[in-house]
Each structure stands twice: as C-alpha cells, then as structure tokens.
Image (cartoon, one colour):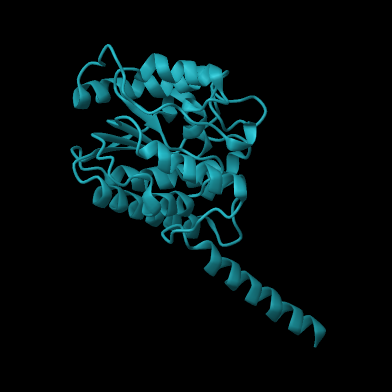
Length: 262
C-alpha cells in the first residue's frame, strides 16, 4: 500500500512539475533584491539618452555592454558606437522573466529602430528535463513568440533580429533541444520585420562542440571577447543595412552593470 501511495505521489509531483514548467509565455518577475534594483536601473536607462539599437536577453547579452565586464564593454563600444546602442539584458533571466520586464516598462517610450533578442538558454538549462525535450522545446518556442509579440506592440516600427540560441557545452545532451528551438525560431522570421540570425556554425562544429576560445572555459556558456566578436561580425552588415553607417558621435544612455558588483 505504501508503494502504491508513493507511486501516486511521485506521479502527481511529475504532473505538477510539468505544469509549472510550461510557463515561458507567462510573465514572471525575479524576486531577488538585486534583480529588483537592476530593473529600476533599467527603467531609468530607458528614459535616458537616445536608443536606436536595443539589445535584450539574459547574461550572455548583459555582459557584453556591462560596466562590471570592462573588457567586454570595450568590445561593445568598438562595435556599436555611433548606433546609439543600449543593453537591457539581465543575468539568469528566463524567457518569462524577460517578458515581465518588457511588460513592466523597460521598452516603453523608446521606439528603437532595431531590437536584438537572444534568450532561452536558461530555460533549456544543462540537463534534459523529466518532462521531456519536446515539452521544453514547445514551451520555449511559445515563450519567445510571446516576447516578440510584446516587442512589436511596444515598438511597432522596430525590426527585430531574433538570434538562434548559442551552443552550450556544459552538457552536450541539450544541444538537440537548442537545435530544435532554433529551427522553430527560424520559422518566425519574415525577412522584413523579423530577421533570424544564427551564428552557431561560427561558434561550434556541426555537432555543437565549441571551437577553441569561443566561450568561457569554466562554464562553456558565456562568450569570450572572441565569441562576442563573432556575434558582432554577423550583426554589423544587418545593422548597417537597417541603420546606415555608424555616426561619429553616440547618444545612447550610459552603460549599467550588476548592482551587486558595486
């Protein structure tokens, strides 16, 4: 009898976990104090300067234009100065967290000409979920569709450059999920208002194994300067098409960083 009860309880827990898991299209705030402070700072950033090029995402995006990663910030300035670019990524964000930030003021009133979106790797994680890869792929795809719709509502004239999720080698088993999600993202592009851009073949080989020096050697997830330059080299022809050549001066708001780093 105990075994039966245990099995029923375990099955119920799995169902409950699956229901909780499938929520990438439901906005969810980060509840830690550091993230709340960062949100307030990004709200202030949205009201400062001029933003023609808006980057959104998680820590992979955030680190590029952050004051607490000066070497990466130098690379950011080298590549995007003159395009009035601002970084609105936040570390450890899942798709639903990004959706919440967008729905709570971080894109209001900006009207950028171009939005670059890279998100989803934190939903994928570094292990195949008990719910199965198919459930995760569908959930992340649905969440990113909702993010794009929200961006289009908030910034109807912007062209969205939708990035394929980058390879991660902290567990090669999840590469199949990333490839499946990226396949779905490619189908969202119309070639005009939504452009799909995937640089994974420049970051890794055909199996998803990272090329030497592209990602942080410790986590095999966050790009090095070399990896970010690969991303920049792919973006710049599209940005030049959409924004023209970079100007000699820049009016973007000052970069922000991790409040905890201060």
